[in-house]
Length: 173
Image 1: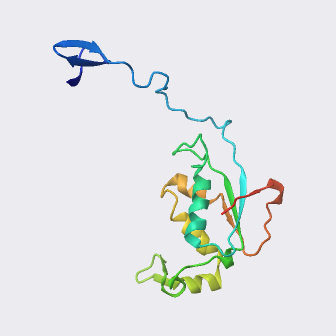
Image 2: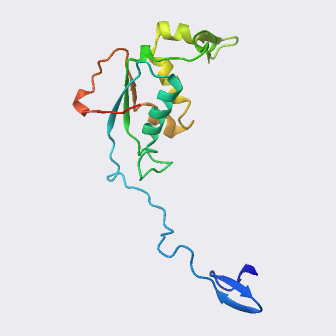
Image 3: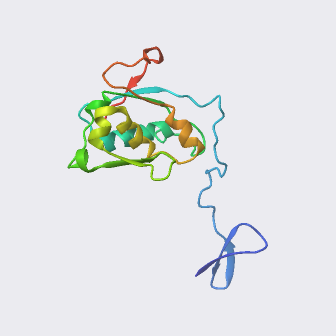
């Protein structure tokens, strides 16, 4: 029993004991067209996340998923179908194990010998919101779309944020 494709037609055929007859379509009601939402169909919501006591990686994964829009049925990888994310209490995010002292953040000034390295403890002391920003940025695409999605992430120290007018919904973690 062999399945072969007849070069003269696009339908599948089944050969059985010398006889050939067409196989039924395995997905008769399934559309083969890709749905791409129009700009007017894309709806962007605002969500707020409280980072107090949450693990950095788990918080960043949830934020990146919301920013990309992977929680929506109309997710399209090459469009901004995601939502805006507000993270509050960024200074109270948790790092597990010895990451507070052992995790290193590198950047380069662009000059020869300009590699700068900081520990997570140093970053938390100076700019605690950058811990969350860098963790989420590492989970987004490294292209134009990823840079646009990073602008939709709003990270704040403390419980207050200036986006009350957008009426953000609380995202449970």
